[in-house]
Length: 429
Image (cartoon, rainbow, N blue to C red; front, side, top):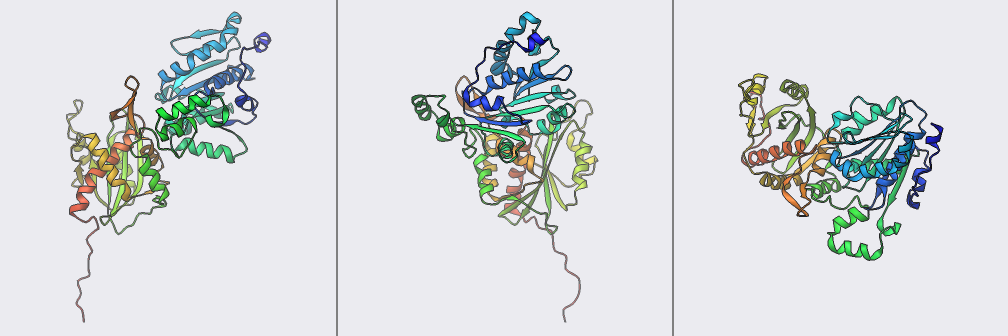
């Protein structure tokens, strides 16, 4: 095995990544422009870590937002990196996108779109590529626990997608001495020549160029429906500490998942010009009773509950609609069905609705993140954005918010949401 660890690899790191390979910090955040070479650097870093790890059967992982993306971006690089170890007994498992080394170490590719595939495993090191496109819960609920007992390392890499969780990680990496931090802008690295950058700037929008080549977290998220509106909410101080006022009623808005997540927003309208978004909850794999319990557990005075227009569809297994089930669980006489509408009309409705919204940053953190990242699907063949939204982890929060916006706007215009004032029945003397 000592021979394996002494093999010379035909890899010469770019000077921009020398400090990264020499780092001592356990966690790292790399914000890099396109074609900077971060994937190659991280694959070789994982392989070196796998072969030098003193623990038994080291496990390293490379994760992209989608498994097919990991295969397209990193699989060939990994197979090329491990070629010198073939003669020592290293093997490649094509179906599992895994390399096994004769030391017992493994490097494997995963997709963040299948969080369950990562649950229950242990990890000695991981690279999360294009972290800005991943569900933030992947790190907190799955990856971080997998690193705990063996004190594994983590590397977050990608290009910016607005001021989201990846931005927060980068800011933390700059301020925390236990983190390694690196930002590589195309205008500074010299890895792409000036003429190519000039041509790219002509072909891309200003936001696209700043995001992809200059690593700007302030550029508009490409294809996002609400990113600029959410940024305006930040700039105007409408995302912060927003308290519930017991003088007004609260409405919930739901997106009901079947096999995936169910999302609930809590809205408190104040007059016709202000919407307080005071709470958000999301979970998956739970029955409807679980969500009703979440609603009842909050000490709010409810005006009603907004449900999607397909809530009346009867399920074949029970013969009951989800509306009937929710009513049986205690939401009687307080349910309103969102008006049926085209998704694009609903998105436009949300754009009108958002400037009146004030968000509680803490209670609505995940929902806020989802609204910032909710975006259209990109057609690789046509090189253009499609009319329909991308269905990913942001969809549930965005759909529930859309149902709320489409319903509340109509109600606000025809009636007040404030509770009726009860005056004491006494005379005036």
